[in-house]
Length: 598
Image (cartoon, rainbow, N blue to C red):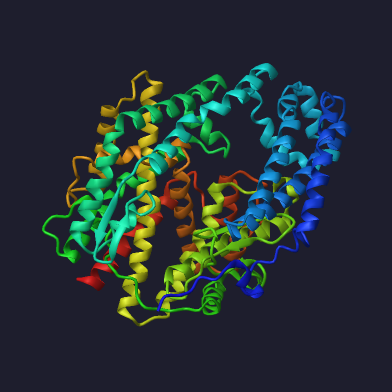
């Protein structure tokens, strides 16, 4: 019997997030939006005054802080209400009204950064030692790093205006691959299924090898029809990255991208080297897959088929919360009790309703709660891991808010992926220790293997590819469809190894990855999971000190650059050891799975 999906109005209040800490009512939100709009003109009153005195700068920063906090409250409320029911026209209108005013506020304060960075070194030095500005010292230091890479006001204005069209390759790629291209349908024993970017990987998990082959051939056949167009779009995106970095005085596009998090290029290179050194373990896993699946030939379209089927292990939402609570015992009572209270209280919008956004997310906010959106399904054990994952994000936000002023409570993506996947590591460890079921153990191990493969190995392959592409252009070599395919095929051969047969169209995969239009981003997924695996092993094998080290990392929020904050937790991502630890863990998991399945 199919489950009826309720309308939003029929969802029980106790199953919804409570946004009252943001605004008590929609009326209060509308009133605050008017207040926000009235505050905008005064942002221009500080223009031309930053160099007068530290008092002038502090007055400006205090006012901008006040505006930014209201901006965040309004934006988070509008976003969450829209996520509840994307078909609700009132919520859509509310978001549009917010975006209009927020854009005005951004334009009204756009003068601030160029003016601050134009101040002479003597003035800046005196400001940075002034006690009156102590609350802003960290955020100012982060901003002032860009002084050598900032152009004149006129040049910055021109660059800002060109941003409207330099994003065209990304927009065109998304429109082409998600809207204009029709990949057709695939017939399965469950019925006819549409083939899209969203369903591609799901269809490759189908038990029927003919369905997998048909899915792969049909998808890449359509992509091949547009290969030259997409190659030009990606080439344009790479050229834009290089133009923006060179005009600001960076030696490479990669260096410019990593500068924001103060990450040396050596970290990127050592990640690639460590993963390359551990490819034998990945090849061993693909050999195991071929053996367990009983395949004479294992094609690349066979590599998504689950080795261990999803098992029947039903958990109600409340049972999942209690299991997560038990698994997080190594983090102490404050952490796990706060999270349990939040998950059972007003942080989470728990279940699916008509029009609700798909998937899950955590949305931390300084003046509200660290809200979580779920579409929890009792029958899907992965949803319990997703809840633990999002809970990790939310507790990161909770500790950051409690220990930092607004201006530097926001942490970087580099750090965020550590706190979320860390909780999944602890949950897996707890469940492994509390089951005698061979089937459950195989599932849990397979789950961890898939996570490391997708997050460390695959994202590092992507990172290696985009570095190659940018380097080619920086060295004066053209990016053509042939050169792109040739470089990507080399990587596929290296990563998949001798047990996997590549198809003629396999190297077209490099054309379909949307993350490539946000250059040098994906490596953070690999470093994040590597750090969390190392830290989970450290906390599980340690005591009070190791726990406190990890909590101090969460408390640091955005007060440090990512590498420094992670050192607080006890892991040094400037060295290759954490990545090596994660990959050694992968190799040991493959051995455990082999023992269970063969």
